[in-house]
Length: 241
Ligand code: PEP
Image 1 (cartoon, rainbow, N blue to C red):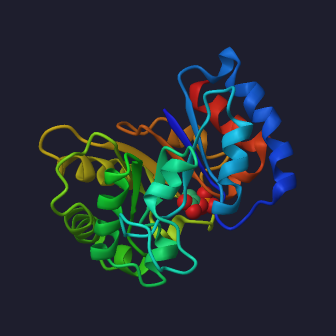
Image 2: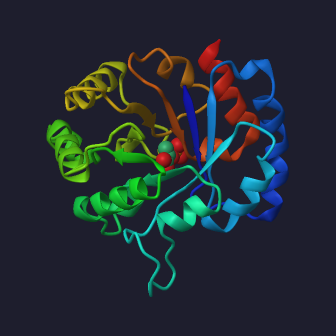
């Protein structure tokens, strides 16, 4: 199981001290077969890389520019730069960025650039509350997968994070039946080998006991709860107990 911590636009140098507990946990037997990946803001990627050098915790970025080349793009960072800093993952298509205008076409270009840089991609997909209420969940997921992954053949380093927009940061999670359906539907979109499927949206220390029983999940993308080391560790522990 993968446990991906999305720190969003939180975290300063001092936040690194809170990671000692997680490092200790990651070196213990308690972690079982869990794999931890931290996605801090760009400003902390290098410090996280150094901090995690002697443990198995991996790092990723929260987004990337679509260009495979360096260039005159003030304020942006491309996949090559992310790989160069020691990161192995990148989150692409997060709803907070889709809401700011990222289209499936742009997301597709970003994924291609990330694959080119040998980064593992965590593609976020999910429906809004309005889309859910009007019965459009499947068509939204279909569209995001179809256009997001257009002309992408190599799917080995691909994770799909099902993150219903209405669930992110709200404390609400889908019913088990809704989640089962969505996961089955996503998997069904891949003829040969399905990518690893993660669930994201308000995962916390209480609801993990229900979420861990959902079949077909390969892990969780955790926002708010991942900023507290104890809670994050608890989520991993409870997944296995
Ligand atoms: C996220 O932003 O990817 C996320 C899942 O956030 P939260 O856990 O806070 O809902």
